[in-house]
Amino acid sequence: MRKGATSIAGAMLGLMLAGFLSAVAQAPAAEPRPADNGDYPLATDVRVGGDGKDTRFVVDLSRKVDIQPFTLADPYRVVVDLPQVNFQFPAHAGERGRGLVKAFRYGLVMPGGSRIVLDTTGPVRVDKSFVLDATGSQPARLVLDLVPVTRDAFMRALAVDNNRLARATKPSERPSEKASPPAADGDGDPRPVVVLDPGHGGIDSGTHARTGAGEAEKTLVLDFALMLRDKLQKTGKYRVVMTRSDDTFVALTDRVRFARAHNAQLFISIHCDALARGEGEAEGASVYTLSDHASDEEAAKLAEAENRADVISGVDLTSEPDDVAGILIDFAQRETKRYSLQFANDVVTALRGAARLHKHPLKSAGFKVLKAPDVPSVLIELGYVSNSNDLKELMSQSWRAHAGDAIVKAVNAYFTTRLASGPAQ
Image 1 (cartoon, rainbow, N blue to C red):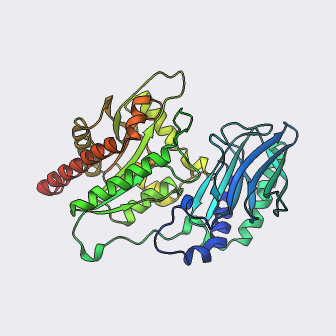
Image 2: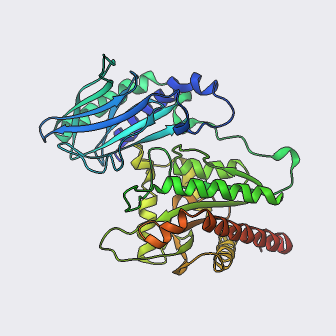
C-alpha cells in the first residue's frame, strides 16, 4: 500500500478508537459473544445495485447508526466503520458484487466497533453516504453511492483526507502507539504460559466450506480453541490465554505482541485449510513452523493467503512498525526455532493416533503470526473444509475431543522434555 493510503487507514482507526473508547471502558470484564447480545443493532439484509457508472450499496438495519466511510488503495477498497452490529445477512452474502463492487466483507474489528469492506473494481469516490431512520414498515437503511474516478483523482482525495484526519487525530490515539496488553505474571505463578490463537475472526472469516451452510473457518477454529483451552486448564499445569475468545478481528502483528507481552512459553495458532475448485483434493491435519523458504508450493500459497488477513480487514500492515521489523531479524535465534520444531514433531506424533494426517504433515512457511523471536510457535491446520470427510470431523464433538486430547499430550511431552533438558546451547 502506498504511504498516503496507509496513513489514512491509521488515522481513521484512531478516530474510531476514540469514538468507541468510553463505551468499551464501561463494558463488563467478560468478553461478550456478539451474536448472543440483543442490545446491538441488527443488520438483516444487504443489496448491491447499479452498473459500472453508478453503484448503490444498501444495508437494512434495525435502527439508525453513525457511519464513517473512507477509501483505500492497492487494492482499491471502500471501508465503512460503524458501531458494533449483529450481522444477520443471508448465507454467502458478499461473495459476489455488482457494478463497481466486486465483493464485500463484514464483521467485528474490535469490541464496540464493526466494519464493512467493499472490494471495488477500480478507483471510486463515495458520492453519497447516509443512514435513513426507520419509518413505518421500512427498516433503517445505510446507503452508499459510488462513482468511478481516475487514479489521480482518487489519490488526491486520499491526500486531502489524510491531512484533515491527521490534524483531527491525537497521536496518543493512533493504533501504532497503543500500549501492549499487560504481561501475565500470574502473581508469581510459576506455571508456563500457553497462548492459543484461533485464526481469523470478526470481519476476516477465513476460508469457507463448500456446503450450503458454508461453515466459516473462524467459527470452527474458535470452537476448537475454546475446547482446547478448557482441556489444558484442567491439567492444572499451565496458564492459558487466548488472542481472541469471541468473534473479534485481531491483527496478525497484535497476535505476536500479545504472546510476547504475556511472556508466553508456547504459542499455538489454530486454523483449517481449503483448496479451490479444480485444485484437486487434500485431506488431513498438518503442523507448520516458520521458515523463510516454504517447504512446498502448497505451504507457500497458504502462508500468502493467511498473511493477507490484515488487508482483508481494510488495513494494510505491510509497512510494519520498527518493533515488528526487529522481530523479523531476531527470529534467527537458533533456540526458538529448535524448540518450535521440537513441539511441531510432538504434535504430529500425538495426532497420529487421533486424526488423519496430511501426506506431508510437517511443513514450514513464512507465516507472520509465527514471528515472535522468543516464543516457540506453531500453526496447526486441523484439516481441509473443502474435503467432506475432514469437514465432518471438524464439526464432530467426538473428533474434536480426541484431537484436543492429542494436542494436550503433545504440550505435556514438550514441556517435560524442555524442563528436563534446560536451556538450549
